[in-house]
Length: 205
Image (cartoon, rainbow, N blue to C red; front, top):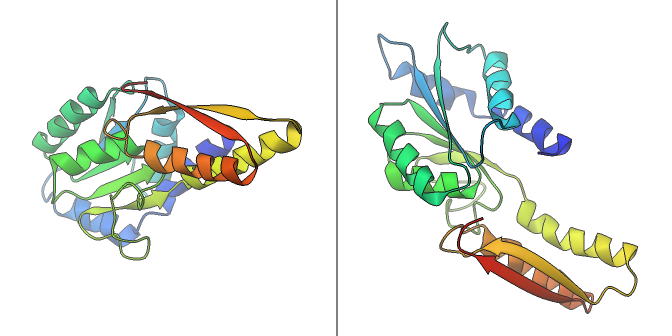
């Protein structure tokens, strides 16, 4: 993970609606609140450290007033589905979903437990109604990674004046809904710059 992404994730925790966080934890009366985290990567991952740091800034620390259950999906959608179901069954107060596959798995597992997402394109992926009013049980932030795809093509074009073709590695939309807006933004930028974009799609990455 790049330094910019790590800083973004660390600040994202502190940017959650504080009232919603307290409300979710307050519902688990008589016991230490349990927070689930679904990470779309393999261990170790800086996201978990950033999450713990953000929670500490809000007054929550493991073993004192919160229990944190972090699950790593290793980038596999089947594990994301399995772990999301297990977190719901363990009666977590909230689920933090890291990246699009984890968000989708968490949303499929529960319609009532609050989900805080870190997603690349939540609006385009159909996770929320709008950035202003997400709706349902999902909130969080958009990393705007899809929108940055076009900027990457622009930078490549500036660095390589005779750039003619760019390959894009992505998953199928059924595996990861984020891949559709991600590839579409790059294709639009390529078309504007007369650069051919060649997507290479895999079912799992």
